[in-house]
Length: 119
Image 1: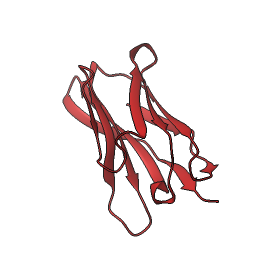
Image 2: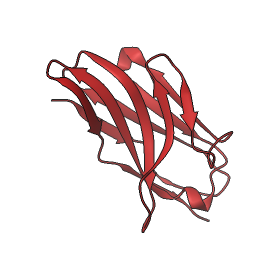
Image 3: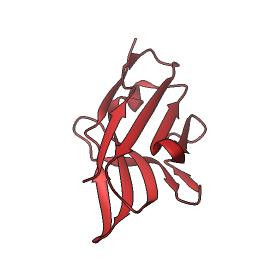
């Protein structure tokens, strides 16, 4: 079984920074992609940033130039550096890993970490 644990969510003032982490544990053959999503109250979950196994990155237009996704393959961890935070960034942030296990492809979600941007 593959499990993801996010950390780093907090209350931060507008203009501030936070770094989210998501560590994977369990048994899998490979990781094909890692991503961060967010869901604000009353809204649908949306993609924030994604990094492929080859290192290619994708960002939502709303976070381009402010957020950076990175990974540490040795630690099976993905990070989201969030700078110049805005109140509209307030949401629950979830990581998702696309992994390969003996039975096939699998998508695994973390439980989420809350980011609140407010003065």
